[in-house]
Image 1 (tube, rainbow, N blue to C red):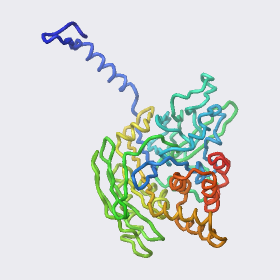
Image 2 (spheres, one colour; image 1 turned 135 degrees about the vertical axis):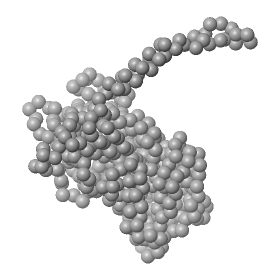
Image 3 (cartoon, one colour; image 1 turned 180 degrees about the horizontal axis):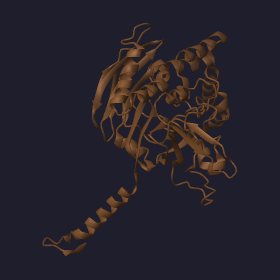
Image 4 (cartoon, rainbow, N blue to C red; image 1 turned 45 degrees about the vertical axis):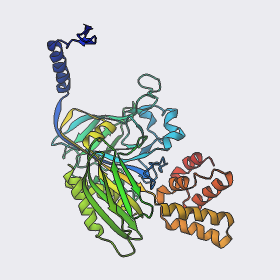
Length: 448
């Protein structure tokens, strides 16, 4: 409260009375305590993937939505609309398909000695959810027909009401969904977590869905806290923590033609940087076995708070992406504070123990990769039939996988001529035809 000018002519501010302040604090504390705590444990893990140029620029890219998931998983193009209402136009807009972050496979496990019912909501303030299982009670932005009948475009969230955590006796005869695909979705089930049941809320529909976790994915429109840069001759990798909290368990990993090299750093404090000397792996010249690196990754995740089986399930889920795909990348564990800001989680009742472990992944684009792509496009433009075939083979040999489209776009951004862009598109199709599940989205995104 301002009461008038002080001795120096400035306004003097009176401190508020102490009793109302104490009463307000007590009320807030009581409100928090009102939320019951139940006898169960909840654990969660997930990853956030960013793509970065040699200058540290974090690149907007278009992940293959749903391509690597079982057919029973819901996506924004195959929503469970009977539960949530039709998705709003903003969920289907092109901009939702492009993002700086791919939030990949967060899974939430529950451990309870007895049957339990929990309400779960995860907010994603700077992103959008794109895949989930089981069916959700509500999500945003959606057209929530059962409530207001108006589009909620102001908040991004996903919610499961009345998640039934099944005790051991009730879960004996449950059969989990399986489409017989080789999706790495299934590796996350290799834990001791309780089975979950979610019942349909649609009148007359008695179907239930089961799994050992709640699953969701999405796209984030924000920068990762870790920036990675390469020097001009690609011999040094410098990592910079631009976040508010320390990053832990950092792994520099490079895979080339079946060989792997890695280096570790325990902690990178806020605003600090560290430089690794890069020694590119050559065929048959790894500095550790795959099993050794897998074990060290599982150790790091266990030290971060996961149960050992959860940590091993996470490594198994991403083994091919982290340790078998050609490329240069940094993996690191994000702080609890970062996770809570990025993905606020609300469980009701609250668990007696909650642990969330999110791994950041910075995938790096080498300047030499960009040069080889530029040369290949030049061969497509002016080369003979044999050279054009060679151009496609050279880009295939880079084994860029899902990062092919953004790498091509970054590499060719300097030339916007229709002819050059047409050649780039032809190269992309020749190297990596769109998967069937995403063909429509691919052609929509590329304008073809």
